[in-house]
Image (cartoon, rainbow, N blue to C red; front, side):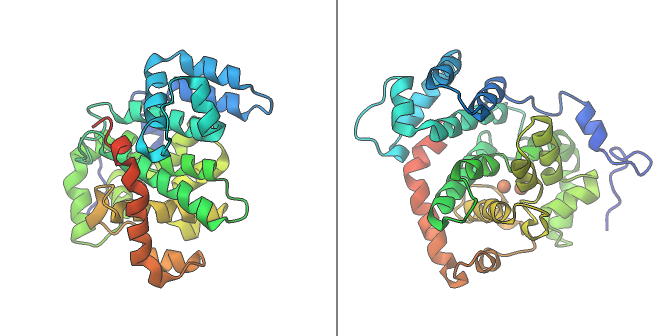
Length: 300
Ligand SMILES: [Fe+2]
Ligand SMILES: [Fe+2]
């Protein structure tokens, strides 16, 4: 077994504080996203306020309109204004679109994914695919207490820790991969051994720093170990399952890795779905994502 990387661990201390102290390591919360989330959390915010905020960013406005007009939303007419976009999408879907755009800005940084050897845009593509699957599953399963929009956000942000770990991973990728492939560790175990922290826990810390609600923080932390989650079990399982489904549908590079100690079938069984439907579910997911292909490759 490999020794933890001494460059990153000091006196048995964990590297978390080092990473959190380095502001350049943690991507800043995309500014407008934070403001829009804060606004929509207010009980009596108005559509006008929301439109005014989005309008401040012409690129965001263009992105929202492009998303609305993509085949994913299946509209029979063209949406040409933000007011119209809100009217047809509804506030929740619009906030989802804005969030994914904010995340795209962070993910589209050209150096952001080198460490994980992901092509530019791949992590964003995986994250948005996971979010679309989670939202659709949440709507289909109608689990009590599950809000499809919160599910979308939690799933969208589940791998954010990878961005911050990236610069450390590039130095240690060989060690991490040898633990995964030769010692059959999960990626999370391997990151913990080599780096002192894994992307799930680090992602949770970032979500806390960005002041996201607790259910999102918990979903991010436990997305590879959903059965260990101390709270929000249904939401966490939904995010974990959607992550695995996205990878199975080839929206993600982790195809060859054993993502969690659980299989898709086991998780489906735990969520009162028929585990024998696994292959059908993967086919369904591929079909759900087909109309979004355009949208998912928009910024590649
Ligand atoms: Fe992950
Ligand atoms: Fe993932």
